[in-house]
Length: 446
Image 1 (tube, helix red, strand yellow):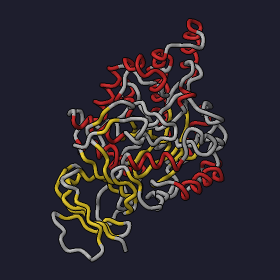
Image 2 (cartoon, rainbow, N blue to C red; image 1 turned 120 degrees about the vertical axis):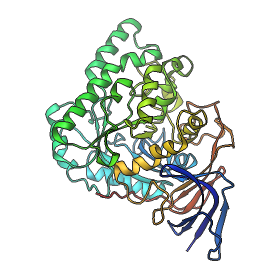
Image 3 (cartoon, helix red, strand yellow; image 1 turned 30 degrees about the vertical axis):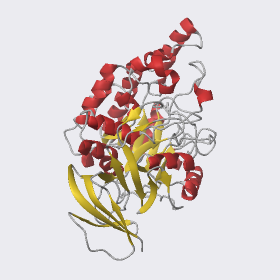
Image 4 (tube, one colour; image 1 turned 180 degrees about the vertical axis):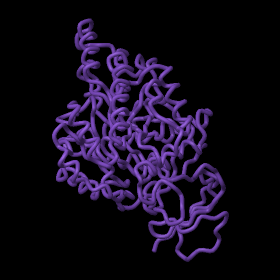
């Protein structure tokens, strides 16, 4: 049995930072102690040298583009970028080609990941106006949940029939993850801008088109329907300050039936950045105002927002380098999400303990992921070592995304991920990938 002893680490876990040694046996955390000196022979010893040790990040919203869109990304390439960024588990969305809206197509994605993913994985099944029967076949022990696009969908996945939506909400105990934007509002706003600019709409009009009103109309309706039906909903990528008031911090996360997430780009960029970044920061929902960004940070820190994620959604530069109406929304983020948040820690915007809560502990709690998201004896050894004093600059030479670019290209960060363990396997160390072990299918305590 392989053994790894991590010594002299500053362990960030469950609200504290304490100097600890951690012993891993096989795929499990065997012992956590102030000092571990006695160990079996043939134990790999890693001196953390007072660097941070934390649970692997769990990213609850990614688009790895496989099958059907693998010219942009694939599960192998993006999971590789993810583990280099300290993400050891991900939940991927169903709007691939074909859309994963039935059990057969969903399981085909799991089979691909089993062969190629360096990180642990789960996938959501996509809801449509007419696939309730397929949704109800979903095994909540083995599948993260249901994804519904109430706006901005691809294929047949826009759920715009209110009767069908209420039936889904009323019929399942599975977690329902939501993209909330009102399509009618967006269409009307887009038509106004096209009447002025044609297809070449300035990118800074994106948050005017995909407006606060479009987001709030949809998310407030979803929250109201969840309260009516008792559905368990999780609203993805909040982008407005106004939406944050739909959510509560009055009860523990484990008791919440209505939860929310914020993404790295909405915490980092605002509408002033369109002039420099253009379509590289064109996401749906849109990056909005400074006021919205400040409101998202406030709600994150006071626990109305429960999770930080990426909504990693790569496109090629050729696709991005088009006029507004043709340039797709989305961008790559998994490799740099953790160091972006570490920069926020350094700048005093969030504590390192709160960061770990939102990126590791809370996704595990919210999805009820089995034995992950914490550094605990008996849990799987998904671990990350971060050096807060090893700077890096994002460049084309070190970007691992298949699309080959990042909205952070040229930016310097003061910290680096030095080691990533997945199920006790050292898969990444100081820029080098190790071994051929693959991640595992996530299981859920439901």
